[in-house]
Amino acid sequence: MKLKNFLLVVFSVAGTYVASAQSNLLNAKTPDEIGKKTAAQLESDNDKPLPYGYVHDRDVLMGKTTWELIDLDERINFPLYYPVDTAFVGKERRSLFQVLLNGIKSGKITEVYGDDYFNSKKSLKDMTSTFKFIDTTDAGKDEINNYYEDYKAGRKVLDKQYINETELDASDITGYKVKGFWYFDKRQSELKYRMLAICPLAIEARDKAKGNNDPIELFWVYFPSIRDILHEAKAFNDKNSAMPLTFDHLLNSRRFSGVIYKEENVYGDRTIQDYMKDNAQMQLLESERVKEKIRNFEQDMWNY
Image: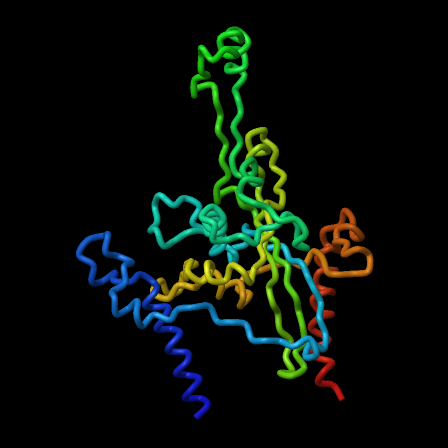
């Protein structure tokens, strides 16, 4: 009976993904009708992210906060990076950064912070220079110097050819940092993971214009507050395009490759790089040691 109920849930979820892949694709008479659901579909559609179960503090036997780095150069992480050029794909396909950026600009994403401890909140106005940088060319500066009095009095306006606009886009994202909490639920006797925050890494628009290629943390978003938005956005499934994965599903199920670069510790949560300097191999080995330490706790629960 339990197996029957489990299979029923699996097929129901699969059917939901099929319905939301590209609605009305085979019945549309014009391209504008692709993606539009009928009234019956909208009424029966109950496509929401799977809610987190309530976890009482007394049920957490062990907990450890970790920070991971997701490198978008790795093939397994490509669904988070592509597409970078939206001119040649449908409206339903966007990269994770584009989904976050659109959510911030539309006001749907408000829990945006400047640090991973959620101390300083950031608004779109605070990040304007991060996404877009406007600078005057050398020829424009010469033009202003030659006709300084006219520009000062407002008799002349600087032509657009003397202005450079550098804008940050999805292709500039080099990776993501994620903050999560590993915990052992003694009620269910299971080691679980809960993502707490995500941060895109990219070259700031100002640095991009000046040729600086060092990526920085753009902003931190509190992950539980954006699950509905991530659930509406679909990541590409190369094995079956009729069943795309949502970004919420992809991140919650940890279908990405990440390297731990920090764990909470007594030294002010210092990073691995702070005490394993100038040795990339030792940093990777230390990252694996932290990962094994968490895994071993679960294994030790079953030793008598």
